[in-house]
Image (cartoon, rainbow, N blue to C red; front, top):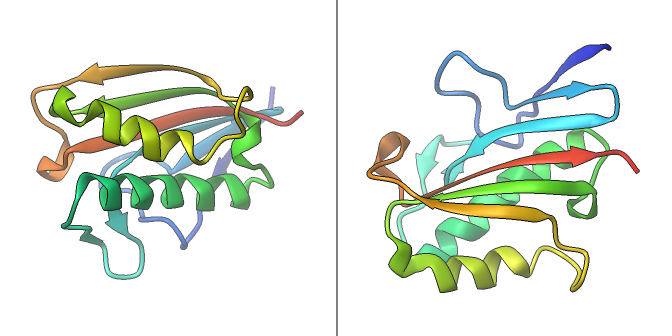
Length: 128
């Protein structure tokens, strides 16, 4: 088993003692991403749609660095501070996957998230 750190400057740098992702053999474990813009490290402050798109872009940059795509994602976890946003987030999130090829997933309501954001998403992908 070979462990490799995968980080990219296109996604926000870690704001704590972790890496953006870790690749072990053909599996990529992506740390939770929030709606931060990499070059400014500022949060997207807008609609939940805009925030979700930024999170998905950040995840996409990490997948790309690992030479993977959203079709390689097998598991996602979505953390929301308010389940009232579930259907909107679900619609944006789903637009990044081919119909019928979506990964397994759970969505969890939490009291709060880092930097008081409304959404965070982590993923596991496998080279296929």
